[in-house]
Length: 362
Image (cartoon, rainbow, N blue to C red):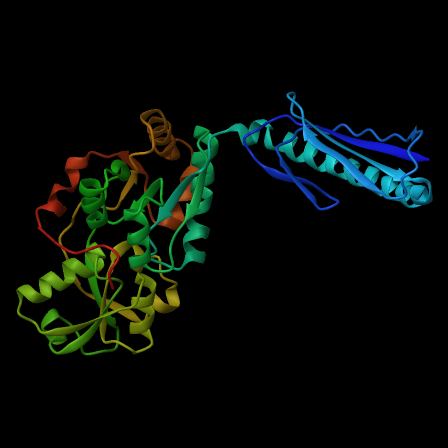
């Protein structure tokens, strides 16, 4: 006597593909939201073959997969055991697929993908996350546009990612914005209210360095070649005074200050905001020996793939930060007073300097 069992899998097409079943060497790739399992044994009379034969593996026009095969009497116990295991397997598959796909279609997951918010790494990634993530959560909750914090290990890497379009929205220095607005189509959204960015040169408090001329023939630390107020402006001022010096790039503002505090360099470039954000134990070891004139500050700008509707929501979110005492507290770690709507022409003061540096180079 022979017995037949069949396995039926109902297929409902979706956008994703998953491995559904690997049975008897047959790999079935399918997209599924539901599984129907039916197993039965039927006597097949008049066929005395002693071998075990797989009969059919097919899809019909409804997208239903059918597996049918036959067995002889001596294999009945083994096959029944196999069927029990298959039943358990299909139940597990059903639960996994159903729950997984149900989760995939919850309201939270049907929303648009989060926008990646890139922050120029003037400080360590851990410090940036502590300072920026609470603000980004506030913006996300108030606008319905989810923002995902991102940065880079150093400023040149950030510049490469910025130019490559890896950030949907980014906080960048004035020179970064001047470049990527012209070459990559970034659009300014907001900048800090009532702020002009000023470059500084700092030295160790107990050193004899008091003015720019004292830096002649010295090695000076800077964050990165394209750091606007912390590198480009100080270097330009030194060059205008015909002061010869060597440059050393140490990847971040904090690294500049710490290297000076520990005596590795006699001086370095930074900006007022990051200097004031230093832990007191480091800041007390340093002094500012030079300050530049002010320029339009860092921009928060969106990549051209961000549509106008989303930009308007984000603008409203940033402007709303100053409307309550609780949200104003989010700005304290950033040493900011709030945001104002930005106009691209505000960065013409930076463009007029006619700086030609490639982003992403050390």
